[in-house]
Image (cartoon, rainbow, N blue to C red):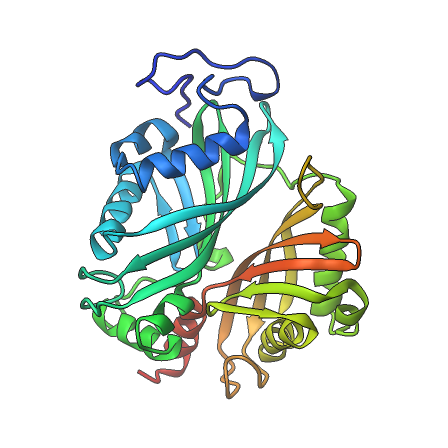
Length: 342
């Protein structure tokens, strides 16, 4: 892994103490994550990825695995070309770790843009989108070296005028057909990175992990026992809603589509910071067969891996805000590649 102290462009020296190795430009780790995101995207400092990302960084998305800094820069340029007015608004950074293990930020963003360029989503539609993204980034000494990123591509597809299932078919065709198209992320295709952390031992992380685990164990009565009746939720598909029925529709619809799939939590963070509600972040997966009626229609028997990341905020009457994301397009792509329904 390539590591660097300081940002190079400011001449500042690395901080000591809890954030040893990071430039004194940053007040703390969330400031680092928010700052480099702003520099790269709104500031168009794409070459700064050479400073802020390790040369051999591993980036995992539901669409697949990218290894190395150059492909990350190329993908960033392509996205800016497709959505030139794209903005990324940082909602929260839920983090854990230390200078030795590496810090892990679970960074939730609202992102907007107008589709005026050719790219991943096809010919320009002129339509705009507003979705959420959560990126889990592991960093040490001013450089991100492992990343897991879930973007609500299903929400973008819908707002640009198509359904995720149809868009996945178009994507397979544009990428050269089922034999040539890149295969979505799966555990078999993962690359072992340098980050070994699993989060922290916060009771808030454990509380949220218990709630999601109960739902994935088909104990959906947990919703009305643990969520605030006025909870606000933001889900995959650009869904923003309130209260119990919305929670049940999302989580039950997902689990019902893959009733025999294995649920796993890979990373778990809880925090209780000044001036903020207690929060938690989970990175999780469902791996197994599409053998049930649910959010993905008729059961097909396809083997599917769902990469998910979710955040929760707690209040006096229970879980008051949740954001849970996975990439519907990547799931549909796996189903279509199995069925041949192209």
